[in-house]
Image (cartoon, rainbow, N blue to C red; front, side, top):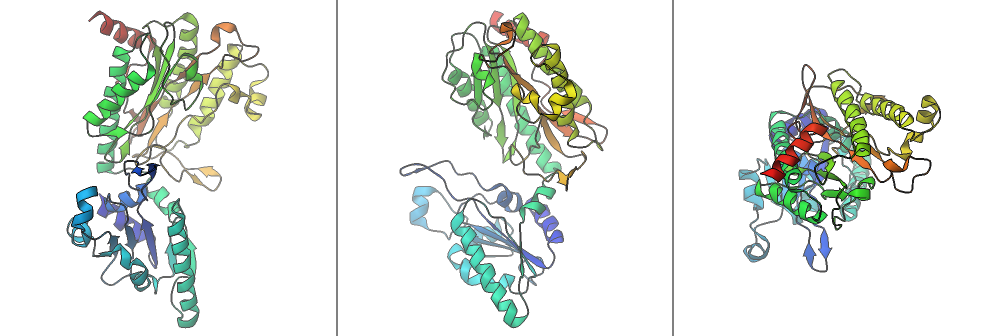
Length: 433
């Protein structure tokens, strides 16, 4: 898979050289690091999961089109932090045409960029390495003025990778499918055991344990929001006790071999929707189903959000949540009082996958192999004015992962119940078992 990605990149950067650093470790506290997760683009091109590495793609080099600079083997350090691939492993196990110790990067890189017209690099969070690239480019540019060869353009590589990552190939889709399968399992398990009296963090622990049990991780901090907490879009405190009569919004997804699932379900903690909860929930569900139905090849990627805004605004007017004219509310974004986010995002090696979905001002169209979420919601804070009191404090979001196919789309997460009848039936069966 990684070799195919490198070959595709090489075709796009003929005459240039691209440099990709690994993600730097991130400190959690005084002397402890967060669990390491490789930079998405670096992994996409290499499959290499160690820090302290640099990937160089040089399509026009006579021998070394793919070069890795890596940490050398060090038995003493490896005793503390684990085995390293080293220079030999970078070539034997990760397909590098050549590999060097990372300490030789400054010395060796000039040999790869000295004849290139363009240097491709994306400025990210590692400011020290960003500055290193600037200095390398300045030095190469000065040499160009004297010798007539070398890069005179520094271009962001992210735009090319964002285009490439938009459509997933067979292996990528296998991983996305597995990530969504595990995500489905976790959501169903939480739905079966959730009940008043539990704490939100107990469901978070259950969900995250299912991810780990299946060789995955939480793709993002799991959201378990009961009652009014569901009106907070990215609520992750997860420390409240669930009350009888609460709706419970769970937004959670598994990352499996760097590819992700992302599901949201909202359901009654006691297994029975109240009438106001039922009304708002059905409203959101109807919008979600209408949007999914419209996703197919050739449809603008911007269309689902446009449709969501129109449908949700119509429904908010019917329910008395908004007043005025639909067109003016849309133009002035009045709907954002209760619907603040877009209706979906591309998903893949990042949960919010970095994909190029526009050409200038125009959205691209959906194509087979794209994976997107659809996640309309309504969030009615308890202090909302001019709202029927029965709706106050209700937050509902419903989210599925959608694969665009040749003939339409496939809901990868369809196995998690989402109709009112399916949810109540599952929860009541679990309680009577």
